[in-house]
Length: 205
Ligand SMILES: Nc1ncnc2c1ncn2[C@@H]1O[C@H](COP(=O)(O)OP(=O)(O)OP(=O)(O)O)[C@@H](O)[C@H]1O
Ligand SMILES: [Mg+2]
Image 1 (cartoon, protein in one colour):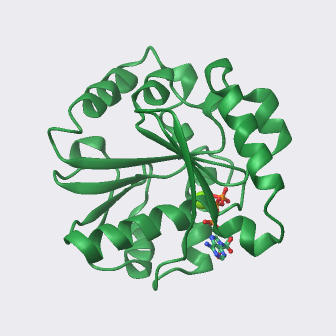
Image 2: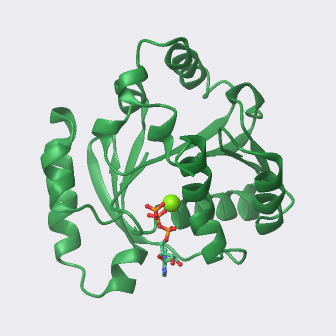
C-alpha cells in the first residue's frame, strides 16, 4: 500500500516499481482503472509502455503481474465493505500470492480504505503525509503514520521529499527508507489522468 498527501509522488513510485519489475524480471503490469471510457483508455495506453495493460474489472487482473490500483479508495472504499465488491476484492487479495500478483494499492490515507485491504498488506510505503492524515488515520495505523510524519519532517526540499519513501515491512515491523526515480515514460499527463477519470466517474463533470 502506498500512502501520502496529494501530489506527493505516489503514482510515480508505483510506475517506477513496475519499471524495475519489468527490467529485472520481465514482469508485466496491469493498471486498474474502473469507470474508464474508451477514449480515455486509448489516451492512457499511449502514455505507457506496451507491456502495461489497462483494465477496468478486477476479473481482468492477469496472473504473474504487477497491478497498479491507483486511487484505490474510490472503489475499495471503507463504506463499501459489506458489498459484494468488497467480498470479491477480499478473495482476490487472498489468492494474489498463488496468482503471483504484486498489487500496489494507492490511497491518501488508510481510513478511506476497506479494513480488509489494510489488513492484507505486506508493505506500507509512505510518501509525505500531512498532519491532517495523522489525525484522520485509522487507529491501528496512527502510530505508524506519526513515524512517517516525523521522518518526512527531516527531509528538506520539495524534490527530495518527492523522491523519499519510508517503508514499513508488516512481516517484522521493520522500517526502511529509500529514494525513487521516475520511469522513462513518466509525464504530467499520466500523473493527472486518474483525477479526470474519477471526477467524471462521480458525475461531477
Ligand atoms: N521521485 C520523484 N522525483 C521528482 N519529482 C517527482 C517524483 N515523484 C513525483 N514527482 C513529481 O511530483 C508530481 C506529483 O507526482 P505523482 O502524480 O506521482 O503524485 P501523487 O501522489 O500520485 O498525486 P495525486 O495525489 O494527485 O494522485 C509530478 O509532477 C511528478 O513529476
Ligand atoms: Mg496519483
